[in-house]
Length: 210
Image 1: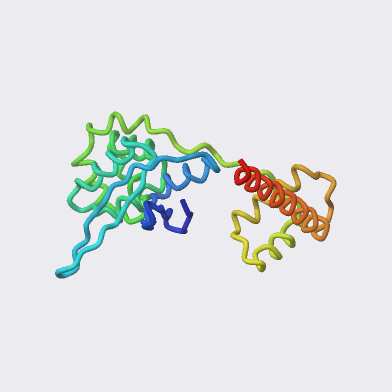
Image 2: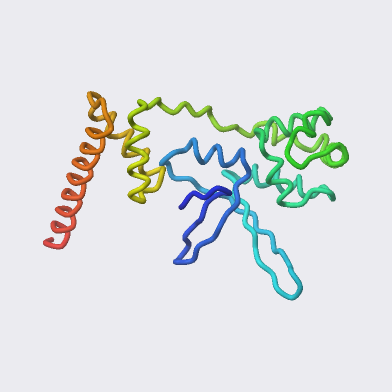
């Protein structure tokens, strides 16, 4: 799974599929870090003349997907509008619908007064199970020293992905807390990477020998 600005790209049997993630779902995926994540996918067929293409929307469980389906059942809400509107925790949005809070719904991207009224008219009293959807835990990334920014810039120039570079920096600082400058940090990152490459090469040789 590859992260992109609007969601993720999934590789399925050699084919790549772009899956759009509503903001609150994206926060959950981010909070999961390196853990395995299973996505519930909702597909929409978009027709343009005689041709069509699918847009895929991803959710962390079936209940989230059902809430999305409920929201697009409102005549004035399309799939992209619904995905954008999930900028707040889904349970908070469900609670606002349940109590008829037009003011809160109007704060959601793309939802004005009329759409807020349409949502409440259609869904009020029908969102009980969505009130229990869990939100993403707050992300408290550990602070890194200022000199690590210089090392990060070098790694980015070397065409490492930002997420990969930041992970290497944090792992190196965790394992070698006495580092105090970018030059030493980069040297230690290289040493640890070289050591890992050697260990992986040995593993391949052992597998081949067996």
